[in-house]
Length: 99
Image 1 (cartoon, rainbow, N blue to C red):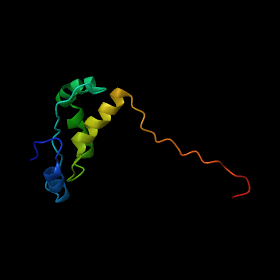
Image 2: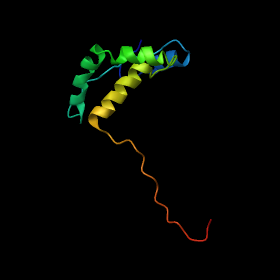
Image 3: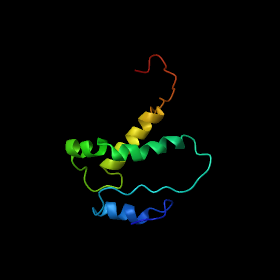
Image 4: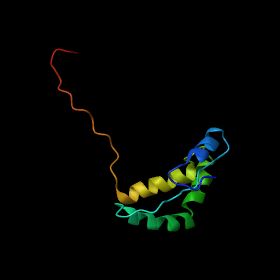
């Protein structure tokens, strides 16, 4: 499969064709990446039973670039960084008499 984190076209094609259940996570070198320390928890997460338990509960989500394992790891990452992913509503002035 793909080895270059900046070019995942082959993995995406394989997922599109239904031949890939979950693309492997690939990382590339970088400096001064905000929040990168939380990535140190990934080996602990993988070694725990969280991913195995998710497979028992949910089974497979089918062929996908972002499979169940990647989805679970991403959710754990987001919860550990306490990211707020709510999308702010656009602020439109409400005019009276328009309803």
